Image (cartoon, rainbow, N blue to C red; front, side):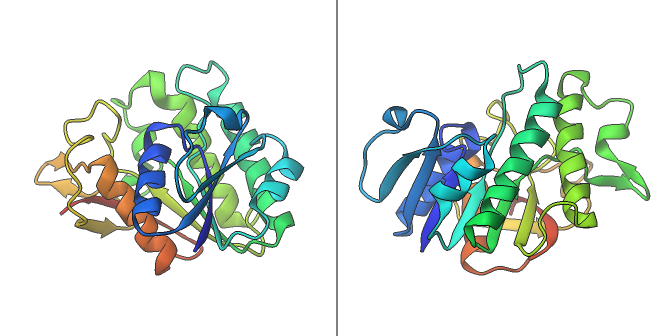
Length: 223
């Protein structure tokens, strides 16, 4: 397949790139500075700005699928506004390009921990992550109400609750095994389950190759 990848230099995006290449896919990496993308077989780096729909459209045209691991960065004081602006520009660019398949890596904050209660609204949700998580929650709502994603076969992936570069399982070896959930966090007993970056990437590429969650959100965790 021809896959266009946004956010390839980030924690999740780098793992997605590695997994996609290991499966023999041709990957077009969108970057503001293509020179920063390491040259390797199967990778084409193109100049593109995630905040510019026309730029995104030109870069992804001809792809079979687009994967967005876009994130302005957790230290961005305007992360919610920037995440929404970039994500909506990416959506518009993909739609303008004629590509139909888009997978968006979102957040865990919108997962439901009780009927009508999302994780982000619980008392112990970390304040430092609230704005970014709220942006991802809003984006999912926009996909679900049709404000964005019209005409696309979109999928929204929520990682496990404590998934980050510093999580215990983050850099564990790839197993290729994982559990799949829907609207609620997956658990290990009383504790939210985790997953390695490699197995998260495997789940993402499995969904791209064999779609099972079109126009839906899903979550994953280690098996």
